[in-house]
Amino acid sequence: MITRETGGEVLAEPRGGEDVLPAVVADGRPVRVTAAVPGSVVPHWQEGLAPTVLAPDYQRIMDVLAVGSGTHGEARDCRQLAAAVGLAPVPAKVEGLRSKARRLAARGWLAEERPGLFGVPVARVGGS
Image 1: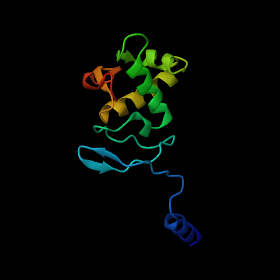
Image 2: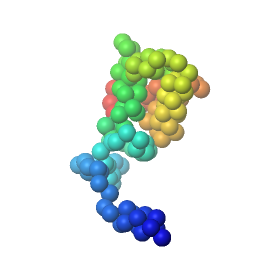
Image 3: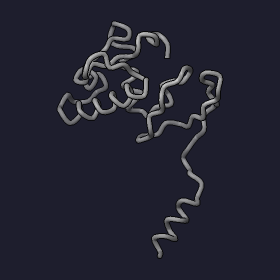
Image 4: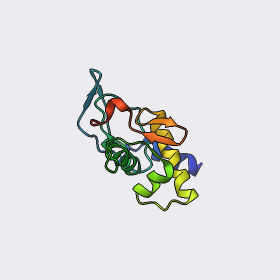
């Protein structure tokens, strides 16, 4: 009984911690964007949506792939990505990063050119 009451109270409270950013218009329709927080869901990419809506870990992956190290928009494998974002290239870290990169690719932020090789889609290299 106490659990139900407590759960009901928690669910009835307004959600705090969501800072609503200025409206972004994508394909002629407004998109509600909230400030990125660690552990947040990766939204599907839409025209006009900047990587700043992503959680910090995902933003770092996007930054590395968008800027590259000398060659703009260069595709990289997950070991290279791990080293570029400052993670030790050990299996646990690489697999965690691979999971994030695949999530970004599934939602249109990245292109998986070959299995395990990720880059920014060619049409968006140079822009966001």
